[in-house]
Length: 375
Image (cartoon, rainbow, N blue to C red; front, side, top):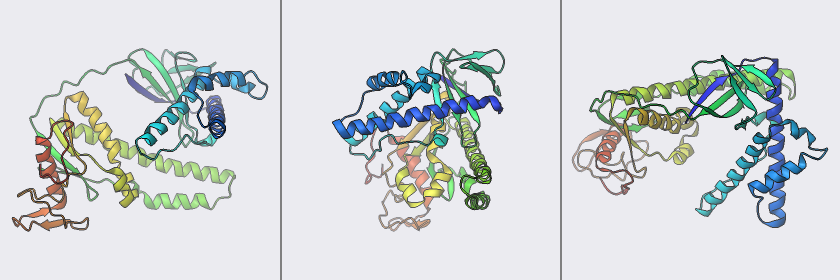
């Protein structure tokens, strides 16, 4: 399966899509309110199929007759998403995790609706028919495979995108094997620290644009609520954030291709992102470690590169890479330290990368490395 994403031309015809998205926001909020009232009375939630049947009855009333203008399959998808959210909540709470229930969404924050087999059609060239209207999009590449599903999304600026799911299976890339293996440690000073000296500096796109963000944000806060000037300031702020997001995404893709072209096997440490965000929230979000790992795993699978993860509780920074003694007194402020047993001097991140490389060689997929074990 492959997803193609294209941006629609911005014109007045897109108003119909915005109205459709707003209509699905009304359906979403009505179903969430109905679920909460039902649970308060009966102590259980409505199943997906009962909710879909109830929506069908509502569409025959005068109050909700305008829902008939919305695609029926898209409304069913809204009910399915709400049901999926409640199922995920019950599973998480059963395992002891905190998980919130589906919440209400304002119309301007509701982003998309999905069409399955009916209600849309790809036309020759760069056109697509959605409902009764035909739209043009920026066709940056050809679409391979049979289209199965189309999702219409809008961002905070108001631009509309189409995401087309096809049954096309991408062929594996015939990559020349290099025989190289590397271990990398994620860090805040350096984005990646390699055991062999291959270091990647942190780009910190948000930090570099912080002054511009503060200026635009202050301009937005000074405008009167509900005014056109405030809306223009909001769009300016959203454009700044979108530029940072795209810079970070471009950096992740290029770095993933660079590493997978150079190495046949990459060893990483499974990150405790929740703990890292508690200590360095904005900086960790700026670096986007989790998004980069997803892209790296995707590219590595296509190129035949192995990605190995060691346990996130393994003390890679505290373990001496020379004698494998664990320094329990090491804290986060110590960037350089000396082993009391062998006298070796270590850079914190370089030492962690060496340990990740070594432990990854002896760790099979699914094997757990205990925190006290030197590997």
